[in-house]
Image 1 (cartoon, one colour):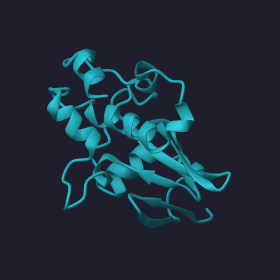
Image 2 (tube, rainbow, N blue to C red; image 1 turned 180 degrees about the vertical axis):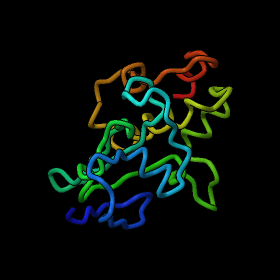
Image 3 (spheres, rainbow, N blue to C red; image 1 turned 45 degrees about the vertical axis):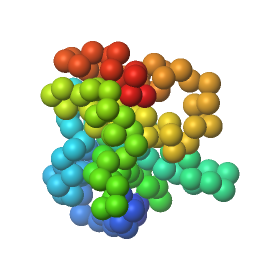
Image 4 (cartoon, helix red, strand yellow; image 1 turned 120 degrees about the vertical axis):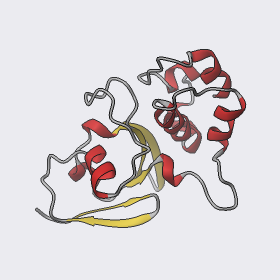
Length: 156
């Protein structure tokens, strides 16, 4: 297999020895030990595996939320992957979206929280990509079973 080159949380990555049907979720959790991205349904229906992927289009980096459980590694060549672990910095331990989730009590068990956060981060990074989307549409596809959606919408 030809090398697949992309970045994960800003760090360059080159993958040469994995089967081409390895999903981004498998790669992140098993090979990078980035376990904030969860496996829920493994079919792209629950949003627990949502990460943000950036791709250069028209001279600028365009971001979108994707389901890592159904995205194969070769599709990431030349792109940037941002996971929930890549959001914080030492000077600011929580990203503003994460801070809003805390402030609005938008998480209970926390299983779905990284997916919701990453969907909202993607929208925040590239608001033109979904400029006409209502908040409900930005988080569509992300499921929560214990918090309820009101605090999540408030955080958004």
